[in-house]
Every structure is written in C-alpha cells, then in structure tokens.
Image (cartoon, rainbow, N blue to C red; front, side):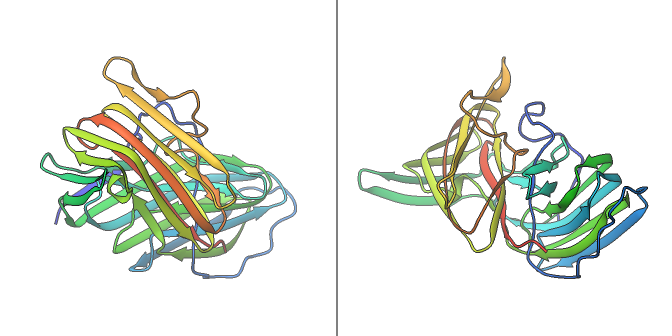
Amino acid sequence: MKTIVVLIVFSILFVGIYPTNSYIYSDKKEEKPLPSPTTGAEPTTTFYREIGGKDTTWCCVELHANHTIHIRELYVKIAANETGAKWLSVSRLALINFETGEYWTPLVDVGGVHGGYLDWYLQVDIAGLNFTYSHLNTSEGSRTISIDSVHNITLSSGTWYLIVLSVPAPECTITTYINGTNAAIGGVTSGSTAFLLENEDFWATLNLKSAPLSILYDGSTTVSINNTFVGFVYINLWYGRGSIEYMSPEGDTGKCEVWSTFFRGSGLSNDSTFYPASTPILGSYGQWTFNASMVAIGVGNTVGILGADVKLP
C-alpha cells in the first residue's frame, strides 16, 4: 500500500494567484443546534468531532453568534484511502455565511498530483468517428493525510458553517477541532456525496490526457444536484492554457481561465470571474453544466471539479 502524506502544501495550481477565500458542506444530521450567545464573549468554547467510515467524504459544523465571531484555533485533519485513476488529490475546508455570501478559506490549498508517464486517455467525437480508450493506472489503497491548522480567525456576526470536503475515497476520517471560539456550536452533518471530475469525465470533440500532452477541446459534462451544490475548480498546468465555465440551474454563469508559461509564470485571463481552488461555486438543486478546454504540455496537466451535493444542518 502506497502512503502519501500531504501536510499544508502550497496550492497545486499556481500559488500566489489565489486569494484567501473558498467553501463546501454535508448530508447526515447528528445533533440539534444550540442557542447562541447574544453578547460578545471570550473565545472559550471548544468543539471536537471525528467522523469516519464508508459514508463520509465531507462534514459540516454550524456556528452562530449575534456578535463578531473569533476562533482562536481551527484544526482539520482528513485521512482517506484513495482508489481510482484520478490525477488530482485535493481536499478543501471553508467557513461560509450563506445569508450574506461571505466566505473564508486558508490561502494554502492542500493537495497533490498523481499520474504516470505511461498513463493516457483518448476520446474522439469528430465527423461520425466516435470512440474512447483508457489506459489510466488505477491506484489501490493510497493513503492520503492532509492537515490544516489556522489561528486567529475573525468573522462577522450571524450563522456560519465550517465545511470540510475530502477527496472522494471508499473510506475517510475527518477530524475537526475548534480550540476556543465565542460562537455557539450548532448542528453537525456529514455524508458521502463528494465527487471529483477530471478531463476524462468531460465528453469532448477531442480529449487526450497523457504525460507529454493533454488536449481537451469543446468538453462538456452535467451534474444533477438534489440539495445544494458546492464546488471548487482546479486547473493544474505545467505549460499551457486551460479553462472551465459553468451554468447553474438558474442560468448563472462563471468562467475561470488559467495560463502558464516557463518564463512568465502563471495567471488568470482578464475575463475570468472567479479564482481556481479558492472561489467556491455555490447554488441550488437542478442540473449544472460545465464546459472545459485545455492544451498543455507536461505531467499532471488537469482540469478538475471537486464538489458535493449537500444539505446543511
């Protein structure tokens, strides 16, 4: 069994172009909300919860206060036994106020990249020629551990949700520890509806995923959501350009296009409306549509969507 330990690594997608923001959430009720304090108080409340098993890939903890919220320390650990042929190995945590639209995430993104020089995937749909062939290596039982530890977080008053989203895995344990807050801790939910979409999950005119060269031309996929959609876009490039656009069930749209060169570094196109890995995509139930494109050279070039169909506590 291969062991991968990922401890607070810089974003796998161009560290430096992401702001301190992001998000996610859940699906199984575990406890009733508690009444919230009505005045400011010292951050003395603590909370610890370990949720794990075959039905866990995310969890959500509710916090509420009628005053400015302070969190002295937030610690999150995710231990997952990964399987499958995905190249990305990512997880995310966030604090979100859905009423105001505010959100907070650590600047550092926890993640890694798999993929071998002999891995490749090809799908073609051109002028009546339609075929798919996959030679992606399947990982069995890779152990991934990611840890986030953040101090001195300040949030506005109201109801916030600590949401932790793990890379999808057959078995996963999520540990959350709040060491000192002046907010009341409410309901806790968890579930297993997290998913990770990559190049091979898009149907395209031409879709080649390989170590020396990846091309995704006119790729599209849809996701059906029963509750609430939360997701993060990942565009991992050595040298090239990649983009993902989305349309919500209500018709709202967004676009993220990233470029990377050997000499100029990396950045976002001027018409991008959100940041990869940092800006959360959030919306209601229904059918979501995602379009993607990519031309890139190197190992691990990937466009991906880490998301979940969730229900808040």
